[in-house]
Image 1 (cartoon, helix red, strand yellow):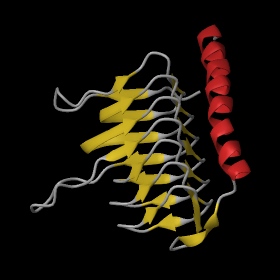
Image 2 (cartoon, rainbow, N blue to C red):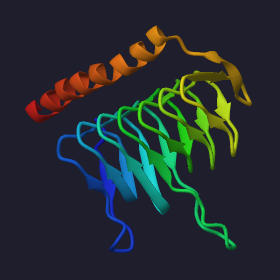
Image 3 (cartoon, rainbow, N blue to C red):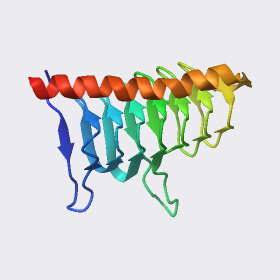
Image 4 (cartoon, rainbow, N blue to C red):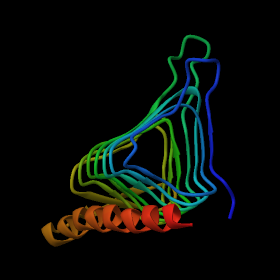
Length: 183
């Protein structure tokens, strides 16, 4: 199995990873990246905080093959860090770039989230969707398509289901941590 790489840049851009987090084999974490308690960064993800910073909150999961980057300051533009709150679900093979995901945000499989966007708490971007720069998914909204557009409001049951997924991933990450330590 491919090993994990955790790389500091320029002496002060060192990843800070809570010891309870799962950093699965094959993952690359580079530069100014902060990962919270019980977060899970699954197999073959790349989190590259080389031109700005990335923050991943507690219990958030970033699923296999996802790329997380940030936007650099350039020509007077301050750039965009990538801010991912607590209890977020990010599906396999997503692209997350210079955006803000508030607590309990949901990003579907293969979705793309671009610079300067925001997904509010309990907002959801559907699988395969692309949220273009400057767009905001409000709390409880579902957006889909390329480019993503508002589709409808999520039901209370859908919001509860998404929130329930967080605990599933925390438990599953603990299983993987135990298996990796046993090797």
